[in-house]
Length: 186
Image 1 (spheres, one colour):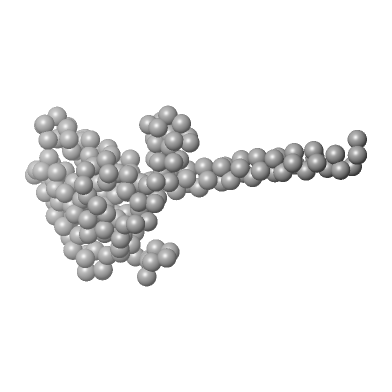
Image 2 (image 1 turned 60 degrees about the vertical axis):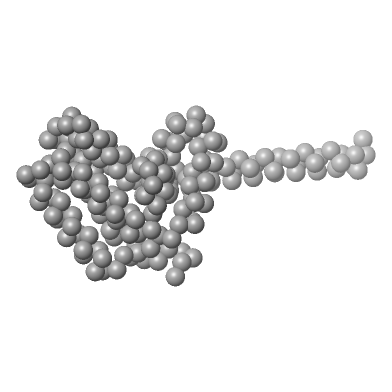
């Protein structure tokens, strides 16, 4: 076999191997980045989608949508106004726990809107929040579920207390998360 024939075989095989190695490496990096960014939401999305490829496509679509949102930081005055409203909701819990949980849900939704998140429907809210708040999203889901139980008077006082704790986790993150401008935004 001539050197030219050997090179004609070896070079394309080597190129194919390099392309496969690069694809695997980039796929692993992409998967690691998405796992770190979305936290528990990554696994939840994989379970819902049925495959990692479909889940990752979905998560990347969420990122693209999120990039188009005008998420903005809060002024210190606005932050203080929301913090004061939260204190009022907490005080309400003592005498009216179900009402306080409902009001906490409304306050979190208002804060989301103030920050620039669309608030049309719970599922879309969670999809939009998952990009920047994936670590806290389970709190929001749990609180929302308890709020639904509360609406039909099926939640215990302990569950209602838990809902307040869950709402508080996302509330605090939304309240303080916008202090620094996002990369690419002024």
